[in-house]
Structures are given as C-alpha cells and as structure tokens.
Length: 103
Image (cartoon, rainbow, N blue to C red; front, side, top):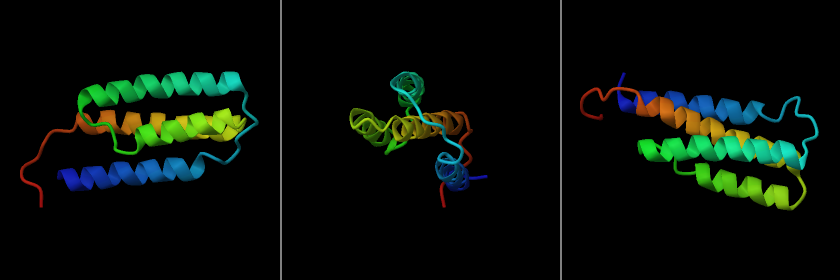
C-alpha cells in the first residue's frame, strides 16, 4: 500500500470519527473540557515530535479553546477529542513503512 492510500484511509477514518463525535454527547463541564484538552495536547505534541502532525490539528484545538471561552463545553470537548484523534492517526501514520515512490 503506498503512502497516498494510507493517508486516504487515515483521513477517511478521521472524518468518520468527526461525523460520529456529536452523537450521544452529554452536557460537558469545564473539567471535562480541561481533561480533553490535556489529552489532546499531549497526543498532538507526540505527533509533532514524530514529524507527522496533521495540518489542521492545532486549528481544531484553538477552535475548541474558543468554544470553551464561549461556555460551549460540549462542543469544546468534541473538538478537543477530534484533535486528539487526528494526533493518534498521525502517530499511526508515522509508524507505517515507506513503500517506494509516490504515484
């Protein structure tokens, strides 16, 4: 499997996760947001150090911070979890071996 196929698979997984993240979400508190933010920050830091952090992950985290500032903790938690999931996918991507030239 070449890099393009791997990336597409990871991206689709991320979009599915984003699409499903709002279902069954309970009302979240500032503490829930802080926990999600901390977990996302740790995961994104690891992804950054691996050199595979996704382009929009930090923007999603900033949007989560804005939602928390506006008092929308449910949305903020969902977005922080989305950023964390992107970090997890980036770390998975970093562990995939290179398989020849890109086409």
